[in-house]
Amino acid sequence: MNIDARIAQANGRLKSVRVGISIEQKGSRLYLRGTLPPRPSSSQKQAYQQRISLGVHANPSGVKMAESEARKVGALLDCKQFEWQPYIKIATATPQTVSEWIEQFEVNYFQNRERNDKTLTTWNGYHIKVLRKLSKDVATYGLRNHEVFRLDFDLLQQGCKVV
Image (cartoon, rainbow, N blue to C red; front, top):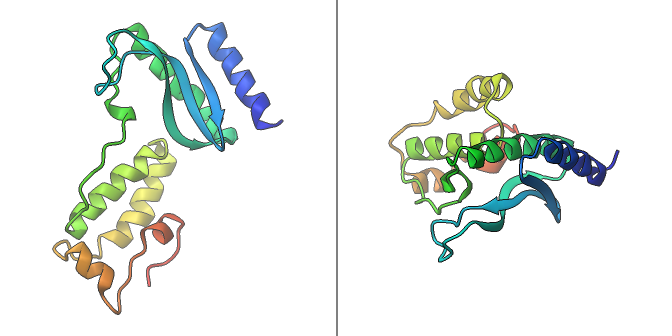
C-alpha cells in the first residue's frame, strides 16, 4: 500500500471519531492540519487553519506516529489545553560543555522518536554508555578540534563507533 493510501486511511479514522485534525504530506514530511489557536507570536486573536510540523518522514511509521499525535492534539483542543510550546522549535544556545551537549542530544533524541521501552533501551544501553566516557568539563569547541578524539553527532545517531 502506498503512502497516500495510508494517509487517507488514517484521515478516515480521524474523521470518523471527529478529531478535527488531519494529516498532510508536503514533500517527504508529514504535517498535522486543523483549526488551532494562534501561535504565541501571531497577531491573530481567533483560532484558524494551521499546520504543525511533526518532523517525521512520510513513511508507514511516520503515518502511525502522525495519527497518534493528531489524536493527542485533538484531545488537547477539546479540553482547551492545547499549547504551542512543544511544537515550536526555538533556537537554543550552542552547548559550551560536553555535559550541556549530552543534555541537548537527549532532548533532541526523544523529540524525534517516541519515548518507549525500545528507545529507552537504545538510549541507556548504547548512546549514554558512550557519552558518559567523555569529560563533563571539556568545552565543546576543544572537543571538536582535538586531533585524536573526534565525536561526530550524526554518526553517533546512525550507530557508528566513536573514533
